[in-house]
Length: 260
Image (cartoon, rainbow, N blue to C red; front, side, top):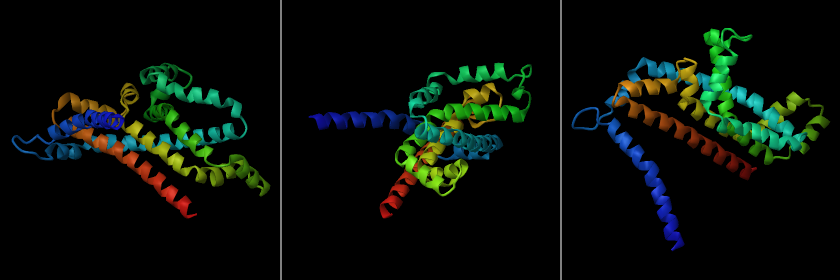
């Protein structure tokens, strides 16, 4: 009986998530009256704004990943090595982006970094891009930090550090050539999650008036019928592709460790 209930809940959950996706995909294929076609997808891919906004968001995602790695890896490493008593505080800080809405964060940025402030980042496109990258880094912080922290728990940080220091390695060398390669799978997991977050984010990009993929999806949804579901399917495929790559990298790493 317990197994029957468990399978029933599992199937209900699968239907709850799968049926809307199936319905959306089917609707996106009905642009041509009376038959299924990929016309909506062709229209999306032929739209120059799709490629412009998508490439812009990919660039911001890469910048966010770099900033996130440079910020999180040294912090998580130092907390684990020297400041274990600070772990609850760091974990609380990294959880704040899940509690504070993105609209509150971006309004704070606009008030602090507008053209009348001491650091007028919103006064130029480059400055706004930098501000948006910092905002995305903040949104991705809970996922990146926990991925890296989980990776650090699987290795003996203290022993590796002492061995490297005994050979004359400095802190930068230890981080770049010893710690980072050992937690690369965890870093890639956080990177794929960051990419998925940046691709679908709307609030910050819209309020900072940047040509990102999220606002383009909303704009297309307000003016077209069949292209928005097609675009949503594409975004969904990108997100699940990132998740699949994350699982593939993790599985490949386990196989390599098993061989070693």
